[in-house]
Length: 193
Image (cartoon, rainbow, N blue to C red; front, side, top):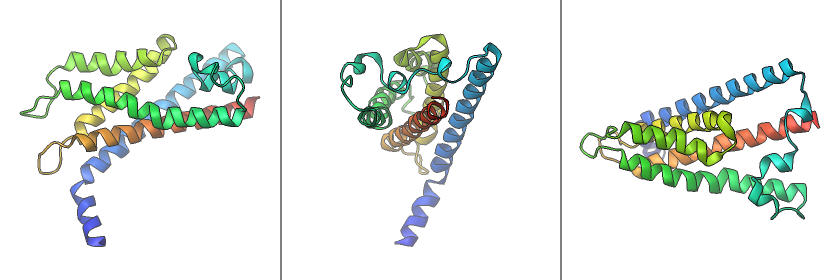
């Protein structure tokens, strides 16, 4: 069994490396964004609660707030965790998979409609998350990184396409990103409330 696992890791070493590199780039991006937000807070003199909204308002989009109006803070967090770390990556990456598949050249495996891909990954992903220009820029950049990951992980070592690998790697990185952002929000809010 260990021999089979070693062979599988050896065959998928490049893909696993791409997942790691993409997650590292996502974390560097999150760190840069948090640095800019903190510098802005220091410059304007806003601290704690002035900079960040309350936990329930931040974690739940407006349409969902009415559903959780009577819920405890713990229940609200569990639903937000399920929605942002499980359901959102599954749904959003399904749409990205369709877009990436549309923009993939079947013969070479390269990108054939670069502007459609850029518009869908950057603008589409950014607009989907709302929140103004700054949010579009932040989420759109994540969309570009996930689009990059799709094209880096779709080919097996023997050259055949595996959409399942590309989809699963995007969902995993997206879920990990959402989980980390959710955790950072809670840590920062807990510190400043």
